[in-house]
Image (cartoon, rainbow, N blue to C red; front, side, top):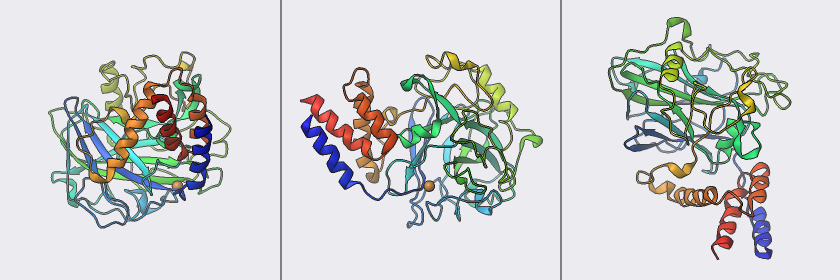
Length: 362
Ligand SMILES: [Cu+2]
């Protein structure tokens, strides 16, 4: 115990300057047979071929009418295209700018798609493209803390991936996937919301026919107003209800999700259908407007590691640590410590856990 306390103090002193922002570092695609992990480019770094459009800075897009709301700050075409099929699981891995965990915990995550037309997306300018929404997640119930309401984004800050299922009836074609985190920690002021859109280029196969209606499509910018209740949100710290900005999830997505209930694996969940929610939240089915009850975010533990690049090897060892902690979660004597550390100091958590694992292994 003494050693633990000492190590924790050391961690405090060693805390790096935590970056306040971040970016989409990886996109994974899980087709149930194999898992492919695509590496994004660090903002403003010398780019490597990627499927994720590189942005120029980890900073947020500010203002609902900012042209960069389309795909992120000065987003550049990417040179590669990911392959996917309807029903595949998209795994978004957001990181802080210094490759620590994503730094924010307040606000929704939304996923849109747009067609790039008949040619691939590598040169596709989406500034006047029509987008449809395939998923959104905001406040969920936290099974590990008495089913209390919490932003799903908190899990990302804690080190989780964000999962979204590609609609199972999605028409084949070339698409941009726009995954967006909106950080609302400053949203009590008009214009305070931080938008983090990230666009990935995919080619969807199959022979489905699902399409969004014209009336369900929006422009970026255009879909949001700074005064939208889910963007300017004076009650963001006092209310458990939330109104998502933008259009509703496209009807064909909702229809396909509810007709394929139960097919998602227990660690994952995603978008719209409030169907397969094993084990969570008895009392929460009375979801108030905007509150969602499904969503468990996949932890880093269940991803295949084979495709990770050198840069992420350190992260891989972190993932192992996280796996162990998850497995020893029940009854682990450091459980309370873990929770406190996560809440107050996201960055401290790993180090604390490393200590904890060292102790429990001895
Ligand atoms: Cu930030």
